[in-house]
Image 1 (cartoon, rainbow, N blue to C red):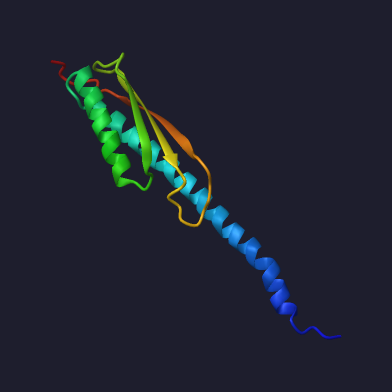
Image 2: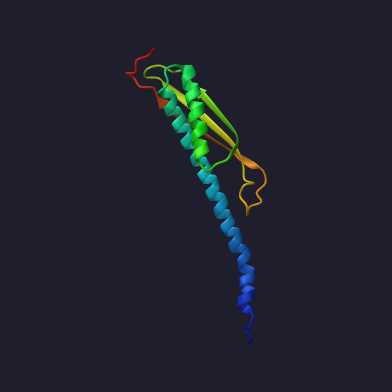
Length: 134
């Protein structure tokens, strides 16, 4: 029985499968990392908002912190929405932040994944109970 060329046939069959698996791992890793970046930005924004003196300052601090954290991360947002809830902004209260990042997968060179995805994260931070309100 002649098995000459069997290895090249097996390689021709397995190579596309292995490439597909590697690309799937890259896509999944990109998705997980993007969600983690958005969650971290929401947490940091909520914490920054609790350190502000007024609700208006809290909204500004949260938005600036979220933008800065997203810029440091690996996710490239086409649009970034930061929603800040300061209804309970008082000593012992809380601040809630929702960060939504709309991103595209087109920046991954080897993947032709159409469209994009929205990543959303919520975070709540407690305002210091013993803070001196203005």
